[in-house]
Length: 104
Image (cartoon, rainbow, N blue to C red):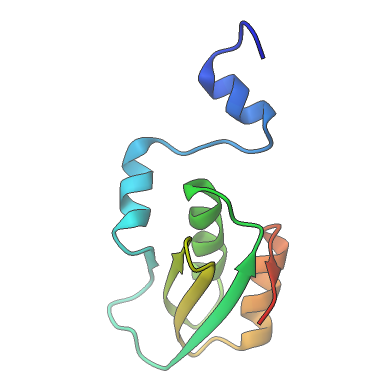
């Protein structure tokens, strides 16, 4: 994509990448909602994530589900770990609505 800046090239590639500060936040452990990680722990295998932007998108989608205390994605393992009382079906729907697939 000759003549375009890096940001424009990334946007044309299909998604926008976050600023480095947001990447660092994601690397430190994901999105947290509330003061405690009460409730059960759910692990979802998520396909389609390729970068830190993908990781953050899934974490944000999961964190928006009612009952989620915390949500963290391991990009290498392609796993999302969610703590709280949210229903598994609601978590799967949130991931799928963000554009990714849950396989387990």
